[in-house]
Image (cartoon, rainbow, N blue to C red; front, top):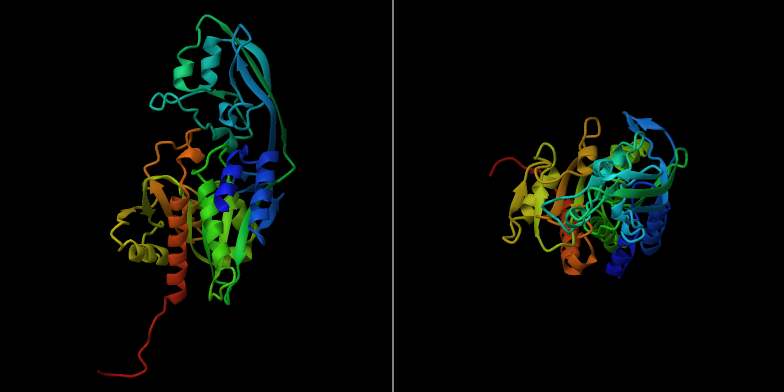
Length: 354
């Protein structure tokens, strides 16, 4: 059952490139027979986007002057900044607070600090601490920082896709990003919705080819389109699946120009009164759709997601707020999209006059 898979994968430390995300991709592909594991080793740079280094963090913890653990990666992967370099030193409160992330509006949540993954050539160490816990730190005390980590620049990284071939090479893609440690709906649930969609049409005869893609957010899509140039030429349009399992309403964000086939299909589906929230491109949130819908590729890509999402980028985005019936609804909409693509025809009269 795919919900059990979702729960299992949610516990992996799925940062951009590590042992855990490699293993998580293998678990995903084992469940969805026929999905492929794709390895990326070159080129080293695409349009200034640099190859993701492999990062392994064996230990990360912050202790007070009494040697009491304040936060530890062992207890919560989000407690440490992804891609933090190694550190072993005792520091003052003044220095420590320069390396702390929290959100006053969500005072009990551990916030996902992800920016090092997009600045991996100059990473900063740090900890994410719930604001209510941070307030209790003693400003006069010293703090012990211990982070044991390492980087490998030439290992490459992995991703996965799941392809249902049709009569034609012309293809449509369903996208979800697979990274984000210990989070369920920001990325992972959308991947499951996309892969489940492809699984359900595997034995059907289709005119077009359909693909589910589990990306490393943003940069993974850059490398995917560059590696598979022929596939990219055949991609007609796409749909990003986001925040799929939460209780919020389903909404749709248009593709960049807002007049693509996928936009028209979603307008048709949203004629159903229970779907009524249409937004412009990236009006609420942005994901990999911007890479597919970028200059030169021009693969019109909309975003189907649930909104609002107050647990966004925190450890509150967990399996407890995730519902199978909500993911199932996303899958069924994806299947409606495929049905409309397959049945979409242009009719030409073979006569003149009335």
